Image (cartoon, rainbow over all chains, first blue to last red; front, top):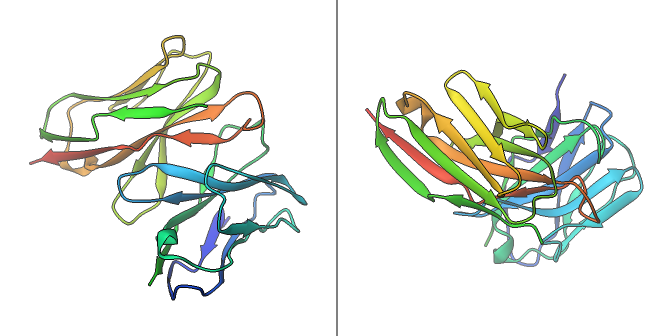
Length: 114
Length: 115
């Protein structure tokens, strides 16, 4: 049981480049979310999805796109990377939006934009 | 808008001390509250989850309490050890509205336990 898998673990980007952070879960969870964590800060919600084909914005969505074409995958796209997007990114999933207590986090993706 | 605050931001204690970490939230309409541990360069490990109808949860040397009406939770760590050194994060799960189901995190308390 792999749980929540994030790739890549580390990435360095140049300003203006685009990239996709991958997130996959094998638990048939409907609810998935992306957070970013900056030094001295807690986790802030970027985007979330309550099921395939349904996504919504969190607290800090600007500069990021998401899609949810399958239940398993929830990729996060940086369209034109900026130094302000240097951060650690966490993907998380739970059974549904309103039920289930256990939330599963991926190991994180460390992104540096130079 | 729900806001979660953790005090203190950092704490250094000698080994063996009992300690309390504090978490407060502005909106009492929460589904549950969860405490996480994060080691440097690592992901999150769930420590304790308290449902909104519960008052406390215990796991080993850890005890978390919840006072929903006053918007407060505490994480009590007994007989602290150097291995407890980490950042502790508190998160509330939104119960109603457009953000239902989402977690709102505090900024964390960085704990250092000195041998």
